[in-house]
Length: 391
Image 1 (spheres, rainbow, N blue to C red):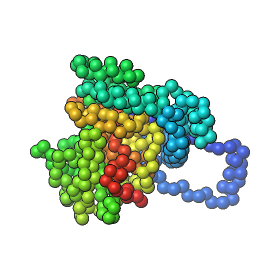
Image 2 (cartoon, rainbow, N blue to C red; image 1 turned 120 degrees about the vertical axis):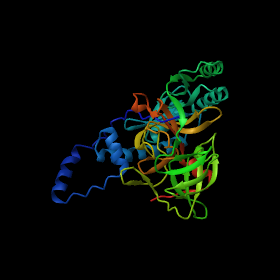
Image 3 (cartoon, rainbow, N blue to C red; image 1 turned 45 degrees about the horizontal axis):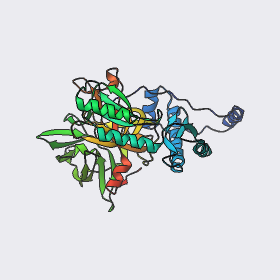
């Protein structure tokens, strides 16, 4: 599958109370203005993609980080029968709930409540039913918290009997089925640029570096996409030996971790492909609706919006991967494994996306939706007992 960016939303946050404006004007006439902090690469990229100022981009990242923290706290106080996920809408955090009692808890926690028909437990049951009925023509399936239902994507040209049965069973389970164009692939590309190289199936391929970390003994490590290491060998980075895999998980999951060789010096930063890098400060998970940017050797630095979480993707044959995050930042072949960040918070590594045409480009380049998938980084760190390297 290959990724596709989606239209960016233009967001402007409120400017505070008018009564404070005169006080601020007086204060600034008497004291020197504080210097604006230098813009980060992530802020500049978001400003460019959404047509807003760098200051507005900084404010958006900060506001979305606050809403994401609120989401974790509020949802943690609700049971799976009481809630059905959360998402950022405009400037508000919305939590889907199944009762007025749960809605009162959400409002008390500082979020907007929206009463829906299906609980998270019911949505999970639908996901299990779709999983059991999966067929080659099903492209992906996951919960859309805004629509309060499971959405199943099926290839528009899939007309085999198995896919038709799977569609019927998905609809019977309460899922919404939509047809999609393009093809969904992991995003490994033939050699042709930077990042890291490896040998597999008699050829040389490239993927992108994810995030650096340390193991329990303090030794340097790096996490990336599992399909980049499955059955592969001879990993190199900028002409030198990169290291060896600690472990690989693909399909099912899509992650790997490398013990880095002595000649590779890790850095707690992500390349923005303009001669600079954005620092990595942590790995707090951003909410659905938050901005996300990804770094990769093919499409460089692109930004979009988090659309869904816990999505299952069919990359063809038996290569099905679950628990992925869907977003709209462009990714193409060779971007696999690359870092996905929201502000300065690590989110995930690129897994794949929806590609179009013989050259396999993301949707925004051909007037189609941009759809990308990534493997959450906190799951990877836990799987290999690693600590994220932060600035």
